[in-house]
Length: 501
Image 1: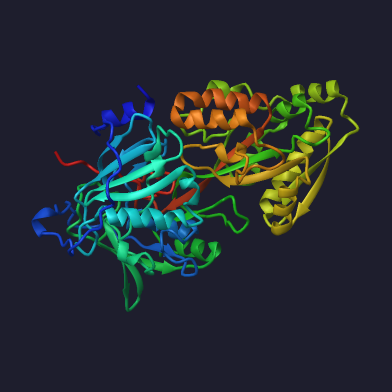
Image 2: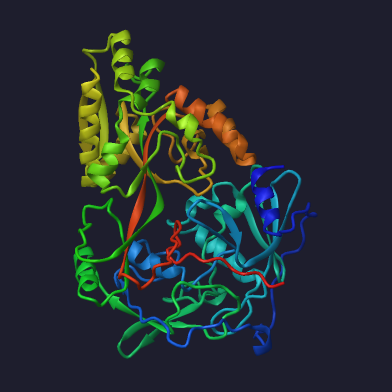
């Protein structure tokens, strides 16, 4: 039995085959809840006082804001059909149960009797419109690569069809669900434990006393004031002078500032994948032996320490090391072994050949990482010329194949989908990387996670990609404030729902 199905069975989620298409459901009525339908959570008599940062320039719309400062707040306000912990384990949230067709192309999800913070029941139409809106957003668009249709088929049922078998669709569906009538609202209503409200003093989060579900939360504050801070240094100062209880920062950005004093510290992997891409049409990298040996030249651990302050995970396979599909034994075969790279260069007699290494000049940190990688490659005998171009020119050079190597960065989907690298019209396909065999193996991995090891081995043995690392956020907390925090990707205040029996 496939891995994800086994996990969800242990969680008591019903898996059966689903039937044919039905007429999409359009709800009627106001859906107002009855107070007897909602179980109020147990809240301690003395809630902890908590203040959080808010960047007013980025907003708090879950499909539009990008700054980690603001996205940290979203898991207190919104919920998805599922939630995913730091190890990429999937748990149900707004989804009560689901059915998957035998060909794994059609899923039907049945909803909990959840309510928004205004008391109205969640319907499948809210989920439908939320997911359709998220598909058009820059932040979540990559989740929908293989999703064809999203339709409400009953008041409590949403059906999703795909263009390829997918064993692990739920891992993509931790997307925040908002009330369908508020898709364009500044602060859309969600089903989470808090709601956003404006006050005479600014903006705050207010606890929902009649919250629909029973879940243990790390924070129990009845109100959480949001303190404006537009720059990392301003937010750092607010934290250090006792106004903020928790902040989420990105050590991978040049604007990052170090924190001082006494604090608790957590890490949350954010899905940003840094890698070296190759141009198979180049004179040097048409040589299979050189492409496959690139991985041995890169001292990833030193890059993590020097440029990301330890807030990243070295990766020798094209998947997050925290993901269940990452095989540590396989990964060790492609780790830093500089003598193997030296021998490959010598054997290919490339000592006097030069490769062009393309990098985005607008990203100063990535540019410094690229220059260090250049030194690593040259230490192995390969001559490297940097091509440092601003963003628009960088993207044009990628499309036109004007490089031998490039330093790429992308937010990889939680299911570690690689199809966009190898599809003929893939959005990450540069330098002639479209490959029928690699694309087919990527699809097979989506259908059965047991195939990821074969895919990763082929990617590395053919030198199609040279993975480097996955970046993380740094989360600073006032000591003793939120000691039980268990942050996950895109979910700093991670919690799971205790299902009613």
